[in-house]
Image 1: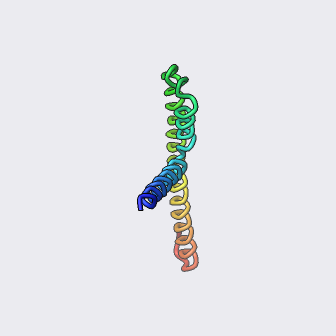
Image 2: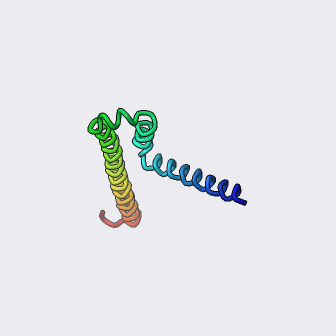
Image 3: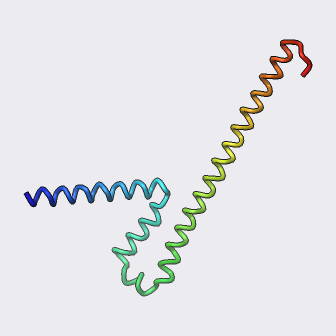
Length: 106
């Protein structure tokens, strides 16, 4: 019975870790997460000796992620505005075409 509980706990931890990785990659935080894991597990002494540099690198990576989010948001807003203008233009052209067919001055 205890073996099954340990297996269940390990399975849930593995699932949670996989979910965390997926969410991090979806938010474009994969590179900062990878950097953090590599520094924490392979270079803890270096990180302890150079805390300003190690944290500076991490903050720079996070800043690039934030910049990519801002650029993506700007592009989405621009695309939405272009689509809205195109729909408005198409509606105006349709109305003008109908007016011409009916002989109304446009």
